[in-house]
Length: 309
Image (cartoon, rainbow, N blue to C red; front, side, top):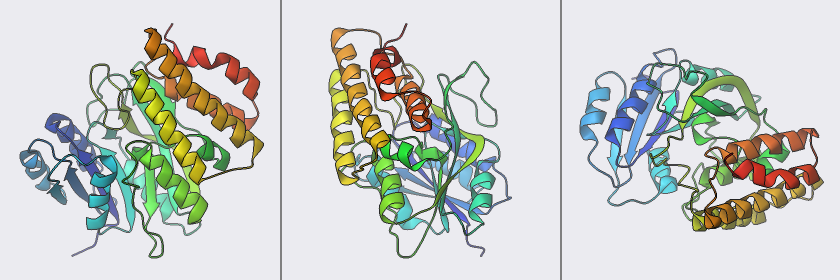
C-alpha cells in the first residue's frame, strides 16, 4: 500500500453538515498528491455517517474523544495517528479550494523549506465546496508574504493555510494548555526553537468562514469583553515565551495588546464591533513591518479597526 504524502487533520465538534462540506472539499482535491484524512470528533455528536460517506471515495479514519477537549488536543490526536510526511489542517467549518494540497506539497518537494503557507480568503457566508468565493463574499484575506517580524507580532497564518514537513527530531504537537492562539504558538516554536524554514505560496487555496450567527471553531466570538481580555492574556503569555529585542516587533506587540484592550472596551460599552477587526489589524501590522506606516499612526487608528461604521 502506498503511504500518504500528506495527512489532513480535521477537527470537528457538533456540526456534521459543515463537516460534510469540509470533507467534500478535500475529496475534490483529486489524486495528484496521495493523502489521508483523519477526522477527530472532539466529544461532539456522532459524525460516523458523514465519515463513512466520504470513506468510500478517499482514505479517511476517525477518532472520537470522550469529551470536548479543545482544538489543541483534538489536532494532537490526529497528529499522533498521521502517517504522512507532511501535516496540514482543516477545521470543520472551513474549506479547501481547488489545488490546495498540490500547492503545499509541490513547494515542500524542495528541501530548502520546511513549512509553507498559502493565502486564505475570509468569508462572511458559506462557500459551497467545489466553488471559489465570489468577490463580495471575501471580506478579508490572509496573504502577507512570510516575515519573521510579522509572525513574532501576531498570528498571520490561519491553521488551514499551513503545511508542515515532519522531522524526526522535531515533535509537532500543539500546546494543550492554551485554549486559544495554540496554532500561533506552534508556528513560533517551529520557527524560533526548531529552526523551521517558512515560505509563502502566493495563491489563495482555502476559505476561512466567519459567518454571522455561526460560531467558528477557531475564532471563538470576540464579541464579549471577557473573551477579548482572555485573548490578550494568552497573547501576553505567548510573547513572554518568545521575547524579541527588535524595535518593530516590540512596537507591534504593544499595538496588539492595545488592540485587545480597545476591543474589550468597545464590547463593554455596547459599540458595534467590526466582524473582521482582527484581519484589518493584521493587515496594518504587515504595513508596519514594511515601514509603510508608523506605530504612532496606527495607535491613533486602533479604534477605527475595531468599531463598525
